[in-house]
Length: 185
Image 1 (cartoon, one colour):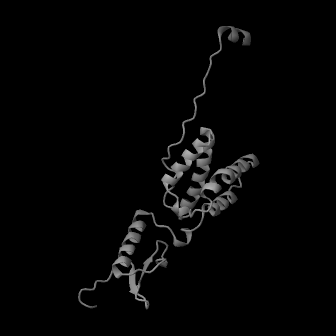
Image 2 (cartoon, helix red, strand yellow):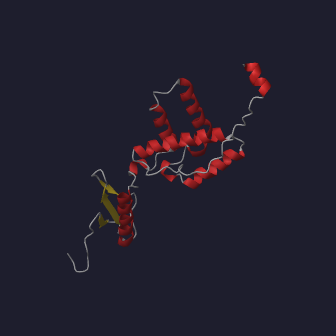
């Protein structure tokens, strides 16, 4: 090896005929994966590899084939697994997805949704006048879809975690009067 050139301990960088640089790395499942783009300089390719290695070590790596799948695709896949639900519960899930989740996030690649996106959506739902209960159910539906993506390795964490949701109103309990208790007895 030429003086001054060091071989990387993880991943490989090579120069393409175009003069650009390609980065390749071993995935956690043992396959070899190339970056989805080429780099102008060797240093940029090596920096990209260093970031990929760190993602893998932190357990945040996502398979490239899953990065562009949309929320709508994951929602459909998730609903198909819900075989143990009562018909009304399944219909409720489908309605919430169709009316609230898909119009807002359906076309978005699942890996691009951020916590800030979800929080802004909650604020929109509040502004529309939805009840706290409905908002909690709708956000819960999105979270279940995202958890399915986490279990499948497409996401490392759900952006629905630690979202500020509206408080549920506390039910006012009015105790029975003495006359009402006697009437019941």
